Image (cartoon, rainbow, N blue to C red):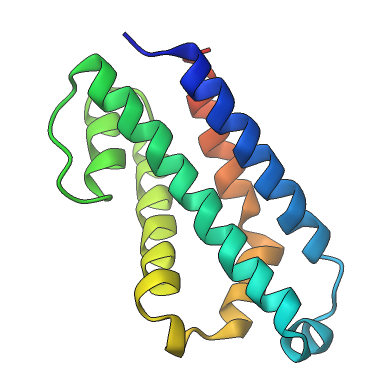
Length: 137
């Protein structure tokens, strides 16, 4: 059984992270790139927001006995396979997870212009995931 409180709490935290990220959208690219507090915050809160989505997805899979998760990419695949998300959302989520992996594992080589682009143009991907999770509330 999916624990509503677990999802509610994680969605609340995700909202908090998205609020912080939206506040960083106000900076023009040159100012963003010149200030380690701006790009460092964006990188970290993007990572946390993405990890929150995988935590929620993993909770749903575990609670409903939908299958085994060996890789983060298994989460959207299983949820799509079982009809909880669309193919399009699965593909978007897999890309989001890939970006998280870059932030975590290739942090020395992160292109901050890409981080800025994600910050400016891809937060709605996380909003779409929130909508998919809200079904469980």
